[in-house]
Length: 319
Picture (tube, one colour):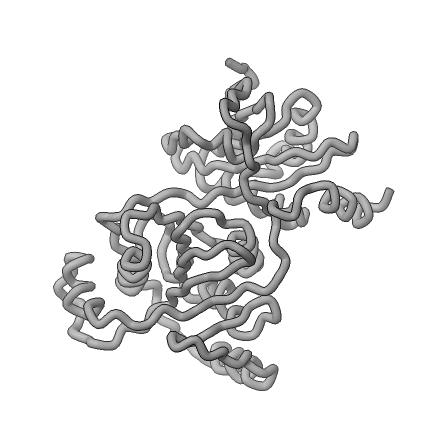
């Protein structure tokens, strides 16, 4: 069976609630007068931030099928953010007080837009934030918002905004290419007063034997120091779940996270890859995205669900 036909059959076998392929509506949040230069100085503790009454923020109310949530875009590394990013977080928090902030750090410009669309289509929380390390990756992950056929933008009054034309897009690219000595990324600041969580990375995997499961990826950041959240097994579901520590990036010693998932799927209904560090985490994500694995939402689970969980250490042992 051809790969394209196999993937089509896998997708047809799963419920539509696991994915959304329609148009995504982004409604620009109206400006908040209280978020000005003085407020940003207060939030960051940086007295060098100038006074300003006009702060342009990329913050939206997203309507994705039957789901509605708030989403923002800013510069940051996932743990700290630019001054404008801190303002974006403040604006989102005004819309959903007390809600957890789910963060998606994006570091690869060649798959930045793909990552944005995957999370917009599958996110099930209340507040989502995309963080980019510099302006190049930021542009790669946000430019298509203004011209993608999959996105509709509305201004704060509810009026539909037009998409950029090809001529306008070309002019923007030419202007960017002509810029020399672009400034380095701004200073990043920690975000305080808001609960931060990593946004789930969940993929649908079909094995050569025809079994279809969910597999998730978790960033251990520094030598597994970033502990797994208690509910991570709910990301994949199933009666038997394997949690496997991954000690090195994809490709080292010809290691393949997809091959490992296929192997574990013989005995398990869900697989969680717990990456040793961020480099390993990003390598797994990049490989799964380039393999065009579907990103999906967590499954609906029955009351009283109690799976069997087996943890495989990086050295091959398991508990």
